[in-house]
Length: 188
Image (cartoon, rainbow, N blue to C red; front, side, top):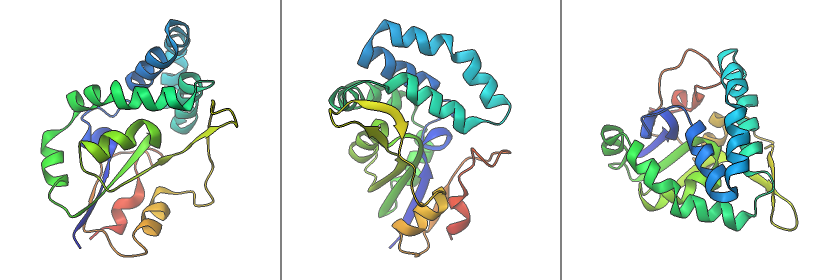
């Protein structure tokens, strides 16, 4: 079976920067106060990115944007608001390549709940590999992401494909290892 694994940010989407999507989530799900908090933290987030601490930067954006918000509200924003902005940012050339494969997998830095509905309904992806938000027993997001026993993206892709080799890996070129998903070396 022909299969493709593609990065979402910077490959299927033209823009590699996901800050604006977290701003949308913060505003739409919670209102102006959370939006302003995230905006005030923007210089800190940028500095963390510049000095190579992208993972901490991402966790900070996730914490501020969704911490304390009910799961249904996050799902509502990912269903009603984000698809329009994702569609505006879609790289049509990458999507034309992506759509011709039988099995399609998307890898994202964002929490899976923010991306999954769009890529499955609009891009016809079969699977999404992304972080999982942690919710408390009342359905509120803690702002943290689950830590998997499988830590790398390439291990998660290999597990998904049961150690079969995906036909194509679509990823942007990157000079930093933390932003470059290493799944492409698993592909034909």
